[in-house]
Length: 332
Image (cartoon, rainbow, N blue to C red):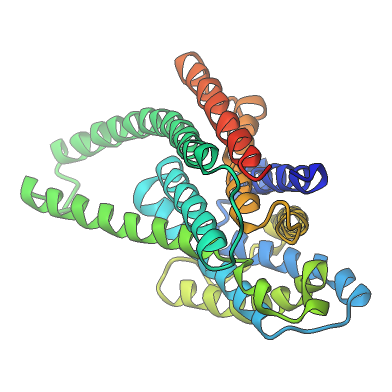
């Protein structure tokens, strides 16, 4: 395994797991910036940070537009998946899906050679298992907070009902069951969709001319983001998922910084992907280990995990790292 390519893949995971913390800053949370609007500013950050690559590599690859579309659609799908399933469950699903999709596409379509399948298969399983474990720990915390919120809302609703101040119809148990089923199916579909599109973001790069590959591919991809992001943001506004305002004062700076960080990870993943000793089948699954670093920020900065959940996070992280190590070693 080429050490430089592997280091690039690891840095891609670090950046991939770190850009989301900007959406948790105090100003963004207090302003209650809707995710589609923050996502719009993240896309602006990607476009801005791609400009230097355009001056260094003034080439354009039409297929890069497809990569940009894949990225924006994946990000939009994550927003819906989080709404339907919650952050932790949705992130586990789309990360696991992206691992399988990118590995399969790299091996079956791009012809990446896995010299030690006996290491690759269990490595993939451990990687997905570690992702699932980290997501499960986050889900436990999320459900605890949700139960506390539900209890508070139930007490408020009971008080209003007792005072005769509510006209809201009560759902029957059958109606509630149908609603939960539809929500779960919608969440499953959007999370898997996010993983499929996310896992294939760099796949079109393999089919462009040689002079447009590598870091030269970034501006073409940014052009796809530029075309797609405003349209999807308008779509969110039109269906009532976001207000018709951009929260410029509170969301622009952290959103743009988030986009710059993501694009740094994108550059690292491109370096790893174009390395023949790493390739898409190894680089992109490792990039999905960003969930480990996202969880680490949650522990260190936001104190989201404690006690048993924190122990579970560290154990899952060990499993994930073991999976990454085995997957990397499978190409030696």
